[in-house]
Amino acid sequence: MVGQLLLGLSILVGLHELGHLLAAKLFGMRVEKYSIGFPPKIFGFQWGETEYSVGAIPLGGFVKISGMIDESLDMEQMREEPKPWEFRAKPAWQRLIVMMGGIIVNIITGIVIFIALIYANGDRYLPTSEVKYGIYASELAQEIGLRTGDQIIAINGESFDQFDDVMGLDVLLGTDSYYTVRRDGRVLDIPIPNDLIEKLSDRSAREGLVVAREPFTAREVPPNSEAARAGLQAGDRIVQINEQPIQFFHEYYMMADSLKGQPVNLRVLRGNDTIPMTASFSEKGQLGFIAQPEFKRDTIFYSLAEAIPLGTERAFNVVWANIKGFAKIFRGEVSPSKAISGPVGMAEIYGSSFDWTKFWGITGFISMVLAFMNFLPIPALDGGHVMFLTYEMISGRKPSDKFLENSQKVGIVLLLGLMAFAIGNDIFKLVTNP
Image (tube, rainbow, N blue to C red; front, top):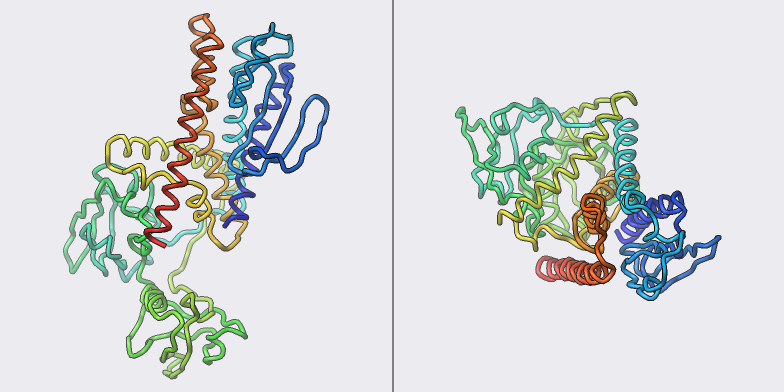
């Protein structure tokens, strides 16, 4: 988790700060420092007028541009007469482009990643028509009115082709949404609570909301696995664990989780024969075989011409989802403690196993989130500088250096407070729901 988080953040922060640096140098501004990570400095080198370095605190980065009031709060330089190469000596429109440089690069990075993933992998999905046994409803799903065996046939009154849409953004971030289900020959509407995303963000809600009830077989049985030692073979179907019949994968998964580290008796269907076996689940609740779902997945592949607009749309959907998420917080439908995560929460998103496709998908998502967050009109963020520069361009009056200095201090305090809250929130979640 830590390795993926550091790699992802280093890439995104490095590119963000590179956007500022390149824009500044394009307009003849002097860039004194470029750093990935915050001090203390681990190593660095001087190239031309700029010192390039890597800091020990990998939660951000910065560029120091001559004649600019930034987080360094170097006011000695600001008391001198402006030099031609300084930020403050340049026209407002050039300064605006410099401040937007990092955001623009993050947006471009996110769009390129989404386009590349869609073009390379297409969209693999479970067709709704395949989910013939209905859903497994978790405890949370049962609280909102769903039942195991329900067949979800519509979302907000509209039919859907991809089962993943059951947990799509329209559901998680929508208002007054509802499922339409078929249950025992009846058709029912199940309201979706507006705070569903908050309930799902609780670390105790590990089952999620719903999954398809799906039969499975063993696709592959590694030679040195516990499953192989028990005698399991590819194509076998586990139909019973400790006298408890099972048909669907979620049933196997739940029993495996409850029997971690314990010996079990299995009954396995092989062809027309039922074979008894004994095995032991690992401490992680695993037998070591790779499951083969029964339902057929479909994949839609796209040409580059199709992937470009689709990838761009999905990248900006991340921004739209963040806006809708903030709206839920302001309406009181989601508490900030459930919505805001720090480094630990980000690391958990990456997960403990490495997969390049998943890694780049999450990194593209975070790139768009960083662009959105940096555009917020908060002093000390790029959006704060953009706000003041926009005011200057419209009014023709530049805010005083003293005002900018004090605004920067306020912004730094706000950001440090937010960071402390996010990290503290991560720690609280770990302690209360390990």
